[in-house]
Amino acid sequence: MKKLYFFCLGLLFFSAGIHGQSISFPAAADNTIYEDFPGNSNGIGENIFAGNTVSSKKRRALLRFDISIPTLPGNFVVITSAMLTLTMNKSIAAASNISIYPLTADWGEGNSDAGGQEGRGTVAFVNDATWPCGKADGAGGCGLAWTNPGGDYNPTVSATASVGPALGDYSWTSGQMVADVQAWYDNTSPNFGWILIGDETAPTTANRFGSRENPTVASRPVLALTYSIVPVKFTFFKATETKGGNLLAWNTAQESGNSYFEVEHSRDGINFSVIGRVQGNGTTSIPHSYSFTHEGISSGLHFYRLAQTDLDGRKSHGAIISVNNKGNAHTVNINPNPVAGEVILSGPGASEGTIYRILNRAGSSVLYGQMKTGGKINVSGLLKGIYFIRLQTKTGEQLTGQFVKL
Image (cartoon, rainbow, N blue to C red; front, side):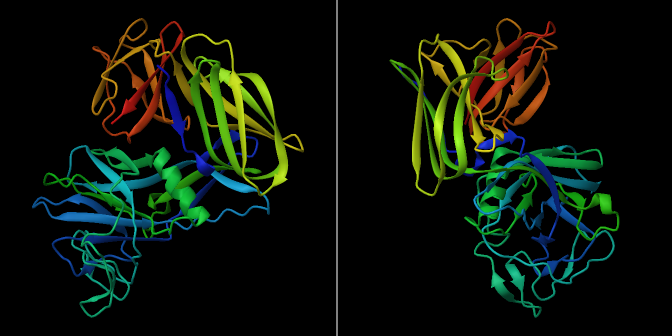
């Protein structure tokens, strides 16, 4: 049976290359909204909160970052990783998950400044976000109301992190965060930032983090990005098993000084070799389609990526995709697959002490550690999608596998 793995990458295509750069942004706005004090806010307070109080009253934090990366005409900024870091400075909770979601409506940071521990906020000023209002009117009403009290946001999780019980820095990172930031940068989606929502199914899960006004600069929210500036805007890249071999196909929306593509192949997702070259179209704003067939291949899992080369010789490597020919077994057995909670790894090499790393379809590491007895790995915090597992045994052998997260 033919198996097709398709990845809509858009501008998320290039994940590495000599154009790769890093940049960090401070928060442009942040605030906290309080379920049990619906008219309160904490616009310029020193802290933000997420989670439930001891009486199961919700606290939700709002964060926005202004993304500005200059580039020259004819080039495209491609965000390749995104990491949000917050400093937790007070907690009433054991370790619990906090998730971030992209907000879908505007909100504000006014001049409200709660005193004491700031856990209840204070009366909202004009433009402060509150539980019922994206922006308060300063007179007890809304200048701009949420459609849904507690904030309007996309219910698809952008990232989840386990927070606590220790104080210190905690980070959120995922492929979906990359997609969020890319859309904000491209102006294909309005940038209203993220809402932080803790475990709201139980009491006593609230955590306090430093805000952008925190007097300790190192405790303020930071969004760290890596990005590449590339001359090609992609719309997709896919791999399909056919009778003649693995058919690779990709489309571009625009190209600027694009000389050619090199198709690279790997059996372990780590070590790649060039198997072919496809000519580019120089500079064009007309969509183009490309394809390449990898013939004479064996059964099993095959990984592919593209290397794009400019007319001036600069090269950028692309995201990794895969196809499992004829459904043959992976080097490591993964059950259940698809999975919602825990995967169990078995087979040669999947033993206690083996180092594992889980990567998303863009090739970014999202989870890693050492195998425990029984081969179980909890993947419940991952977003839905296709993931790769790489194992490094005590003897240095590299093993690979693939699973679908429900």
